[in-house]
Each structure stands twice: as structure tokens, then as C-alpha cells.
Length: 271
Ligand SMILES: NC(=O)c1ccc[n+]([C@@H]2O[C@H](COP(=O)([O-])OP(=O)(O)OC[C@H]3O[C@@H](n4cnc5c(N)ncnc54)[C@H](O)[C@@H]3O)[C@@H](O)[C@H]2O)c1
Ligand SMILES: O=C(O)[C@H](O)[C@@H](O)[C@H](O)[C@H](O)CO
Image (cartoon, rainbow, N blue to C red):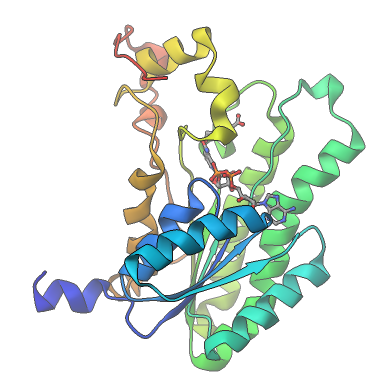
């Protein structure tokens, strides 16, 4: 890489906290931030997943810190920010990947489903950002990247609560970007389309939906976690120091509206 590009995209000397960073998408994001030079602190709900990601870091000779926490309460979010802040004394980048879903028709959603999905997808994003903001402000700035979803824009059956939380996260991106611009904290979000992970297995493992994806996603396939890595690196990089309150939608072209007007493309989805 030329020196010019290295200066624009290197994360050397920076510390990143990746919440949900041992998940299917999160582990690729965590590794990519580390390879770009950041000291990465990986949070996850699951100790087993953290062990897997530690092994991935070890194999590459990258320094690893894992923190296990259920982010279901604001207090837990504050505790995670405090612990992460102690590792190097800074948090330059926060990526919020924590997410939960329970696929059900609206009529079957219980108050407990609603509380679980909103507490992970919205409340933890809200309060983890709130707890990290004073650390970023004190050090002169930072970057926050939220994982929203294509479903913030387009309705899909059986994910009403999930979709509402993701629309809220996209909205929160603009509020935080506005309020925290003075602190040089830049906040942006990513709305991935369908990513082929366990999280979406009920979709791509179903004949009808797999055919629909193959035919109507203009790029003819679901995203793979590694397809999302560069969007995060871009939003975290020195190169994008004048970009805030924005949203990027890596969705293979779904938001072009092609699915509503195109003839089937007849690609194949590998399952
Ligand atoms: N997979 C997709 O198609 C897709 C599409 C759009 C957006 N997203 C979003 O991307 C993010 C990552 O998704 P993924 O496919 O890697 O899913 P995943 O289930 O592999 O990862 C989600 C992570 O969230 C964390 N989490 C869940 N409940 C938690 C809790 N109570 N407290 C703390 N952490 C908790 C888990 O640690 C888990 O590793 C999510 O926010 C998801 O909504 C995924
Ligand atoms: O469980 C699900 O149905 C998925 O998580 C969906 O949310 C899609 O992946 C998303 O809507 C596309 O962005």
C-alpha cells in the first residue's frame, strides 16, 4: 500500500471496542480492525465465541482482550465501557454489532419477546454509546459505527420488532452525530442486507425464500460477513473525518427497488 493510502486508512495506535464482536459478522470486523492496526477489545455474550475469536487472533499474532457481558441493562453497558476504557486508557472506535431476533408474526409477539429484542438491539446500543461518549470526548474524539439493517427501510414478515429497533438505530445515528459533533465524535450506521449467517438461516435455508433471494437481489447472492468489513474500516478511518450522521446500505442492490420491477435473475444461492 502506498504511504498516502496507509495514512488515510491505518488505525495504528487506536483502540476499538467491538460489541457483539465474536458473532458471525463481528469476528470478521474484529479481525479486520486489528489487521488495520487497532488494539481490539472484543465483547460478546458468549464465552465460547470469545474463545474462538481469541484463537483467530492468536493465529495471526494479534493482541486480544475479550470481555463477556449480557448488555440487557444500562448498568451492564456502563460496566463494559468502563472495563474496556481501562485496557489502554482510550476507546477510539466503538462498533455496535450486538443483535437479537425472534421471528414471529405480530399477533404472536409477547411482551417478553419485545423487551428482549429492544433491550439488545436498541437499549444497549443507546447506553453503550452514552457510556463511551465521555471517554471519546476526553481524548478529543472518536468514531461510532452502528449495525442497523436493511429492514429499517423495507418490511419483511415476522421481524416487526427487530425492524423497528433497526429503524430506531438509524435514527439514533443522526441524533448522536448531531449532539456529539462538537466533541469530534463521528457516528454513522450500516444497514446490511441479507447476510448468510446462522442469524438468517431460517431465511436462506427455506426453499421459497432462497429462490426469492437468488432471483431478486440484483447481485444474485446474499452478503458474506467479509463483504461488510471494508464499510466498517472506511467509517473508522482517518480518511472519513468529515463524514457523520450517514448510513450506508450494503445490500447487493435491494434498495434499487429492482425486486419490485425486475424479471427473475435465476442465479443460484449455495446452501
Ligand atoms: N445476519 C444478517 O443478515 C444481518 C443483516 C443485517 C443486520 N445484521 C446485524 O448485524 C449484527 C450481527 O449479526 P450476526 O449475523 O453476526 O449475528 P450473531 O447472532 O452471530 O451476532 C450477534 C451478537 O450479538 C450478541 N448478543 C446477543 N444478545 C446479546 C445480549 N443480550 N447482550 C450482549 N450481546 C448480545 C452476541 O454476542 C452475538 O455474538 C446484528 O446487530 C444484526 O442485527 C445482521
Ligand atoms: O432474522 C432475520 O430476518 C434477519 O435478521 C433479517 O433482519 C434480515 O437479515 C435483515 O432484515 C436484512 O437486513
